[in-house]
Length: 224
Image (cartoon, rainbow, N blue to C red; front, side, top):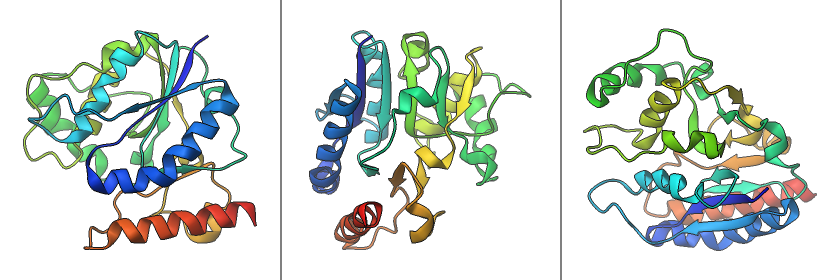
């Protein structure tokens, strides 16, 4: 079975982050017997770079299973296989809507915009697309919409939530263990996580340097 860890690097800020995170991802992929696939050429210039994530569909033409990991994520050096956390045929992600209860408010308006009916029941509340496990059976979820919803602060994320709930795919909540948002977990808590995700870091003029510094601290704490 062909496995891949997939990420994307666009823009100077994320290139700086990638100098620390990509080697960690490459080592992790090697431990799993997976390839590292890094998307670095923009394909959809008329919308946010977040939408390049739809290219997972193309990657699944080559690989049987993939784990998407945002480039602003670091992985514990002794993390187990993320593929073992999600059975084949299931879609895995962190159901952050159970913590950020306002996330579900994004679904109804974008359901109307994309013409994807919102199901009253689904196996998840609202998942974070920063870390995902998918296989070939989920390729149809990653279809680039003709137009992106205007003023959407979540870009691809709400759309992917709608796409997945429109299918009958089983869902596995990877929990924050596999997508540990720095804004939720304190420094001691982060020692217990398999990944730390720095999404939502305040965009001050020196935010990249601050994130890199925190990444290094968290890596040291994992191995101390």
